[in-house]
Length: 81
Image (cartoon, rainbow, N blue to C red; front, top):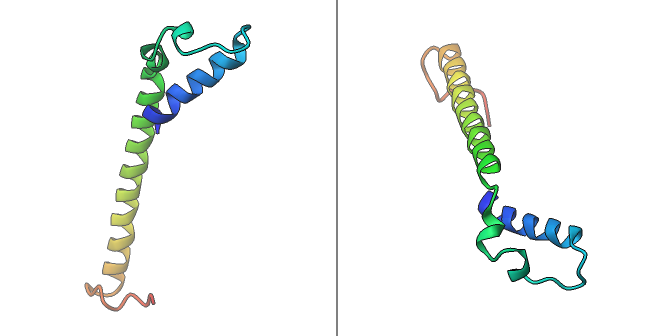
């Protein structure tokens, strides 16, 4: 989402802060300038996704271990429908 959203957000901000009535992309420095500053949002997204996936995996293992031990080693009799 950072690769798609960041250039659009950059273009929107530049349009909002420009004085000219109809600026083009070339006036802002070309297409490459839309991707400038993408490092911090991309690294934040990587860190957040790593945290989400690792916590999901850990909680899933804890949940499975709880029901596996509770039912004397059988997974079939969890009582869930």
